[in-house]
Amino acid sequence: MKNIQNKWLRGAIPALLLHCSIGTVYCWSIFSQEIADYIGFSKGATEWAFSFAIFFLGMSAAFMGNIVEKNIHKSSLIASITFAAGMAGTGFFIWFGGNNQGSILSLIGIYICYGFIMGIGLGTGYLSPVKTLMLWFKDKKGLATGLAVAGFGAAKAIASPIMQSLLNNLGEGGIFKMFYILAGVYFVMMFVGHLLLAKPSDWVEPQQKSKDEGIMATLKREPLTSYIGIWLMFYLNITCGLALISQEKMIVKCIGLASSVGIISTISAVFNAGGRLGFSAWADKMKDRNTIYKLIFILSIVFTAAVMLTGGIKNGDGNIFLIILVLALIFVVNAGYGGGFSNVPTLLSDHYGMGSISAIHGITLSAWAFAGLTGNQMASAIVNHTGEFIEVHGVKVNPVGYQNVLYVTLALYVISLCLSLFLVKPTKK
Image (cartoon, rainbow, N blue to C red; front, side, top):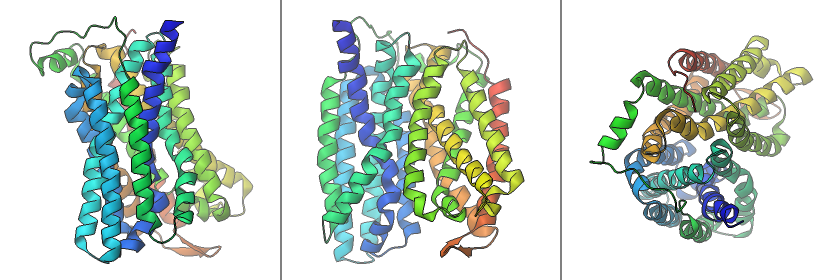
């Protein structure tokens, strides 16, 4: 009974507290327009804060993996302080921008706080509980990591209505007040997670002669092409996911469901979280976890091709079959996007063991950093430079542009499947 209690009290619960807090970074779209209006800049200018947050998430994970490897208490404390400080700082510079409309200092301040400082908290907070969970749940590593990473994915669905309620009820200056309140709430949640998080008492960290030797020696256990394949297919899956998810609301409006955008966004967030938990738990029963990536890419290719060939986004307005097909694509991509995240640490542990898994996982998360800079921007460039914006039910949309995004994502999914099939070699668990 004590062992079961420890698994949840020292592993799963603190992981959920950490991931449900930092996962709210994906709520950016809820308040990005309000921030832009309040400080006197365009929405496009403020959007870079989110891109920087994802970039520094991946890069901080890559560079701080060794700290996480050595001391999860130190890394989880760093995560708690930097995430909360970044959120509070964002609130301060929104307040400053409201009193000094158009001040470039407010925009730079938001970039630094939401992008860089919060980004450090995101990377270290994301990485800190993963290895611990795999150590506690040795026989069900996928289920354990999927549960925590699902918390990251579900955070948007949980926090979005709360944030919207705060914005509606805090009155004048509600946007910066909300950030102050959330900074306090998330610091408490993450600090409690930091206090609870602990590795099993019987786990002994392998001794390394130098901080680099352990990672390099571990990676040399298998052909380097396997690791390159894992990194690339992880990067491409995130890029494709962000490309579609960033245009999701406008695609939904394009097919005549503008009144249901909020509901569909919540459902897609549930699929995202469900994919993180479901795909990783399913992978526990497979001889080779890479099979899950093959399934994710095949499903994504099939549904993307179906919407492409039928012109579902262009022709969906009023056509029930095409509307269902487009929604299915959105949900499948969200589930595959989430599943790609939750299966990376366990796939890496199967290939390289548990000794340096936090450091190797951290380096691999650099793929997330670069995808955060390319996915959204790629989709925006295609939409802004192809097709034309027309009015559908009073909303300006670009059906051809959104449809063209699918041509690129389909090609990238095909490349990802080839990497999974031919570059990432099977391994025995």
